[in-house]
Amino acid sequence: MISSWLSSARHAVVLTGAGMSTESGLPDFRSAKTGLWNRFNPQQLASTYALEHQRQSFVEFYQYRIRTLRSCKPHEGHAILADWEHRGWIKQIITQNVDGFHQQAGSRHVIELHGSLRTVRCQRCGNTQDSEVYLHNRLHCECGGFLRPSVVLFGEMLPEDAIEKAWQAAQKSDLLIVLGSSLQVSPANQLPVIAKRNGAKIVIVNWEVTELDDIADIVIHNRKIGDVLREIHHELKESGE
Ligand code: APR
Image (cartoon, rainbow, N blue to C red; front, side):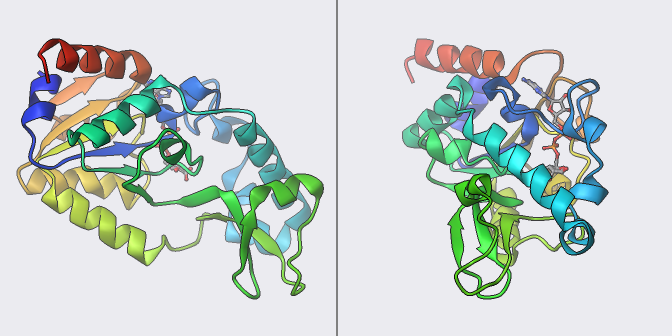
């Protein structure tokens, strides 16, 4: 069913969350046993408060995340989405992830709602550098400003242009596929609601139940995203698309 919806969609959009990258080895945030927020307190480590008042633990937390990120790479599911974009089956990916895996796998139309852990940004002059500098304890810009990861911290607004583009994509979509998000965080979790209101079909592929299962046309739980994407991809190829 999903493969036929994909091949006939006018403007299919994919919304990904941290569950899209667990098969690459990156932990998500809220999975019962392995979620990052079960081991670390986001308000103490990933917030504007931590940036200003807990600088040492803030830096150590992001050194851990940057080191983990650089030891992982996109998996086949990311490559399949890039292929679907290339074939015109999907138009955009809106991601809550900061790992850059969609772009590394070849996707070009990616909207990063929560920024990117691939770079750090100077608080004083705005200059960005590769986040690898954190792993060499280079925490200050040539201008003397502090370098912070280019991600949206708890307590910060999302980038205006990313929100604008994501809203437009959701409004234009006639098929929105959610992959690996608990849909607990706003404003990303508004996107399926907007798409639905504009008549789009909604598909949710997520191991656990999500906040928006009741508005979805198809929900797939207890299956790995990689397996589901491989299955859909196989169906599309079989049908001669
Ligand atoms: N296949 C299918 N589902 C999976 C897989 C997988 N391989 N791995 C994990 N999941 C599911 C989990 O069951 C979970 O419900 O992915 C979901 C990920 O949800 P979260 O951990 O809440 O991540 P996300 O929805 O992306 O969080 C949104 O919260 O903390 C902030 O900024 C952070 O971008 C993040 C935002």
